[in-house]
Length: 449
Image 1 (tube, one colour):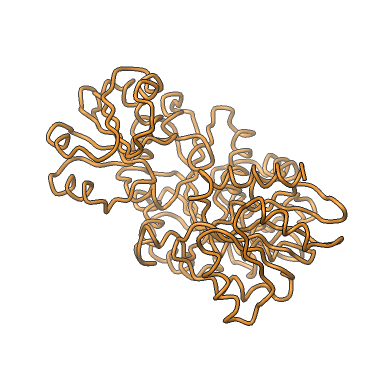
Image 2: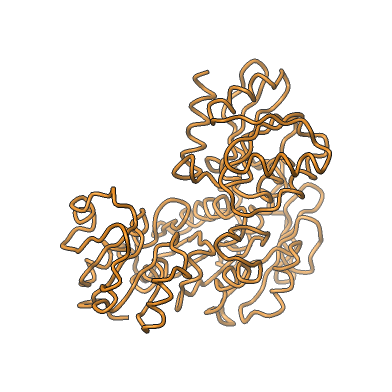
C-alpha cells in the first residue's frame, strides 16, 4: 500500500493511535487525527506525531469523510460505530493499526492471540526469541505498539506480537510465520455481540497463512481443537491433559515434546517459576512456537528457567502478618479469574468486580470449590456478581464502594495463612485507565497499609 501523499485519518488517539500517526507522518501521509475526548491537547498531539497534522476532537466531523483516502482505526474503536459504517458504505479504505504496522515492517512475525494467557506467552516467547535473534521486537497489547517499531525492522528481524480480537477485526495482509490461538472463551461480548463473531475475529490470525506456516493450538479447547482441522497452516497442538502423537504436552510433572519422530523432555515443572496449569499451557504454547521456528532446545530451556512471569498476572506482591497478596489485575474476565483461583494454594479472600462486559459469572463462582472463603465486590458489576453468588449458594461476600475500601476490607477478613487475591473477572474501565493502573494501585495500597 502506498501511503505517501494519502490523506489518512487516525481514529482513536491512545498509545497505538499516536504511534500510528507518527508512522504515517514518516511515510509521507497527510495526517488527520480524531478522538472523542475534548480534553486532549491538540498542540501536544501534533508534537507527538512529529509533524503537521489536523486534530479534531469531540463529535465526529462527518464532512471529513469527503476528504480522506484512508482510515486507521485504533483497537478500542468498534467497527460498527455509525460513522465507521458510513465510511465503509462510502468505500473509504479502512485498516487497523496492526495492519498498518505490518505493511510498514520487514522480517517475520510470530503472533499470539487467545482469550487468556496472551501476555505471559508473548513475554516468554519474546525472551526466547531475543536469546536466539538479537534483532527482535516484542509488540502489541503487551505494551509497545507494533507501529512504534515497524520502521526499525529489517529483513532479518523477528517480531513477536500479542494481538487481540479488536486488532484482528481490521487486518488484510497481516501474515504471521507462526501463529497461536491459546484458548477461546466468552469475552468482549459487549463489543463483538455474539460468540460466533468473537471466534471469527480470533481465527483471522490464520487467514493469510499458507502451508509453509505454522499454527499452534490448544488441544483441550474444543473450539481450537476443531479449528485445527480446517487450516492451511501446519498445526501443532499443545495439551495439559492428553499425551499427543505430535506436539507438546504434560506428562509426569514434565513438559514433553514429541515432534518429527522424537520424544524429549523439555523441562520439569519444578524448573519453572510460574504457578498453575494455565501457565504451563502458556509455556507449552511458547515452546511449540519457538521449536517450529527452529530455536534450539538449549536456548529454550535456559529462558524457561529464568522467566519469572509478567506483572499483573498472578503476581506475588508481598506477605504481611502471614497473609500473601497476589495481583491478578489482568484477570479481566471470568475464565482468567477461574485460572487464578485454581493456582492458589491458600484459602482466598477474593477482590472482584468492575466494568460490565456482559459476562456470565456462574462458571467462575462455581469453580471456587471451597477455596474462596470471602469475596469483596466493587464496581458496577458488584450487584450482578452478588446475585449470581446467592443463586449458587455462595453467601460469603461483602459489597464496598471504593477500591481502597476493598483492599482494606480484604485485609481485615483475611487471616494468617490466607491469600488476598485481586482477580476481578471484570475490566477496569470506569474506575481506572486500564488493568495496569488497577494493579499498580493495588500493589501500592498493599505495601503502604
